[in-house]
Length: 539
Image 1: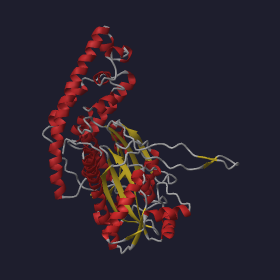
Image 2: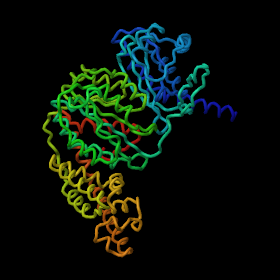
Image 3: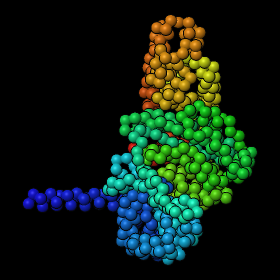
Image 4: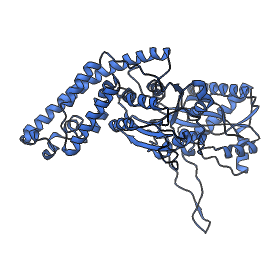
């Protein structure tokens, strides 16, 4: 009797687990079916859902099977049986390995006898959850008709692996399988990677000005955020595109910075930008960012591209849809920001492009004269920042140059917009900024734990410290480091209160008028970051 009771309890637990994970997929099926019915699509095929670079796990077929069932249950479309799809593909020796381009969709349509296929990607999240991105793709054109996203409980335990492919080894015709590389692993420490792609053609001066003054608020959002009790490391990359002064052979695209934690260099690049008329190839610049940057392969890393511009997303020789699918396969959100009327941006495919990569679409007024809000904490943060600067001890000529560059960046930012200097100072009080400044500032090196005071070469220090005894020099550096940490702690506390105040002001302002670049990005990173387990204290 006890054995029977245990079996019944186990069965009930298994059933409830299946129900929890199935519910979001059922909602997804209803949304997809509704969009298909509007387009009068009668018959579809659901393909298996793959991970980055075509990797698969048992979850690939589990999601395919459940979504097939739920779509059929809606009664709005006819769905081809999964085993029949597998048989037809095997007969034609057609192997799907990730990105499905327009040529492949046309071939699929002919083989399966459907005008639309349901395809998508899986992205494993922490806490045994998986993000499912689904798209209904018209086989003849490759156009996305409708899309949906859901998060489900991960009931499977195997890791995704790339499929075994045969590779020719030469004229003998002998073929050997390549090594299978597991994917979907977790880094275990919080990391944020954001690439910002800015249109620098004519009429985009307002966008550049917003980026210059608001970049600190954007990265500062993550300074007080936490993922599993730790502050994330923030890496930012910057591109410009659409500028006729750039090389036509390179698609009028220039990478300004690779991923970096040195936000002073990002700010410097933003202030150096100049606009000029050109061709805006969105698909090309997204492809460049996806393929050219060192994106993390770990599943718990928040990876996002933000592209802003005001011309049709379809321009250029590179397929924007293929670029979006490559980003999605790599677990990268592509968020599109149209500079202009929302409906026009939708008509010019900015919304469809975002949906293809599981991202968000928003529109802003790039010419908006931004009314910068100062917070009650700004004056105290400014005073503490000046005090923190007085604790700096540059090491050698490199240190003096880096310190001077940082002071110039502070002056540029303060002159550009009230409040931006406070955001920059708040960032500089973070552990990430200290680690970056430790490369040239002796006090930052000691305060951040990167180096011991006694290990710093006295010949690199200013004469007032160089002429002290070893014990006095050590004591002086440790004293300055303790003072630095106390200032940083106070700024961090003020920053949390400041962020909450500004978030309230931002919510009120967004209801009254068009968004700025900062508002569009912050809304998105809060939502997408939360899906990666990041908690924002300003919320």
